[in-house]
Image (cartoon, rainbow, N blue to C red; front, side, top):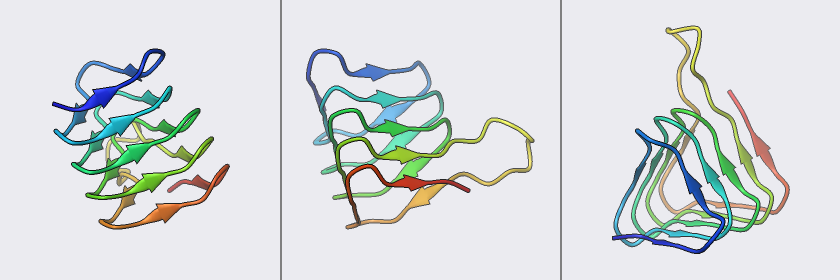
Length: 91
């Protein structure tokens, strides 16, 4: 499975792949976090966002989410990316 330390929140319908590490962070509904990814302290992965393999989301990072309108595309972070502390990536 994946490793989630206390205070991590993973909402129902989110997928976190085996080998991912979640520090105290938030993964919203419909999000996808692939293997080898680290979601660091106070980072949040928005609804329906897609995070690739071996990604490092540093402390306080915000990845935008979309629930509506229905035709809106998700925020996608490709494999092997490093997102620096306190960065925001949105649609």
